[in-house]
Image 1 (cartoon, one colour):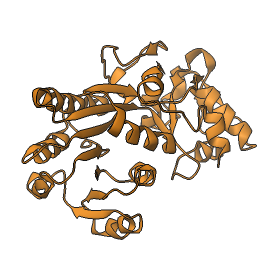
Image 2 (image 1 turned 60 degrees about the vertical axis):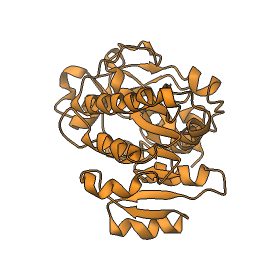
Image 3 (image 1 turned 30 degrees about the vertical axis):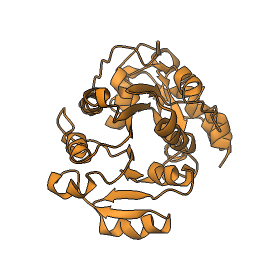
Length: 290
């Protein structure tokens, strides 16, 4: 079992995996090796930006979870292409799970987005994920006649958890960061980090070939209402509301980009096909768990 991009969620995946299983993780950082070993994971040195360093991955694992992000610029994802080439060099894995983003849908105007929706990625960040998804699906289709690779793509929204660094709205609430007023607000989607890890594991064993899954909870909240809910839970003042016309001068660019897209994800496949019963079906239960 190989985890590529073994950060917070990757470590949670390691905890959620059935035992016994031999766990490996690709890392480009020597400082990361002790942390991986402490979680029972054997570190493998390699860098997705240096394809030659990935040669040892050929034929090494039967199941792979790929959680590493694309580069920070450009519209393609050469990292994913390099990884897939390395994995297929000798014998391809039986199953591969790729962690993508719900941003590939673009702005849906608040409509429900199922996995069959046509992609309309608005940002270069999301377009890089579209490119990565295409590489993963191509690998799955190309190997389908031999039945070698069962590839699953997980489209992931905002990840949160009280025990995750920056994993709650607490810091933004303490700073008094504004949110959009109700008339301009957007729908936002979430998944607790532990439920995401469990979804990764479920897809490894139960995901259908070349299948896409929205990995989100059952919450359907506008972003401002989400921050209000969190403020009430933390006994903090609710954030101020501002119109979109003045938000650009008051909010960070990254937060503004999220406020430019509104969608509600359909998680039916997650529950029916992967059989995942969410531990934290709403952000209210998830935030209270900490």
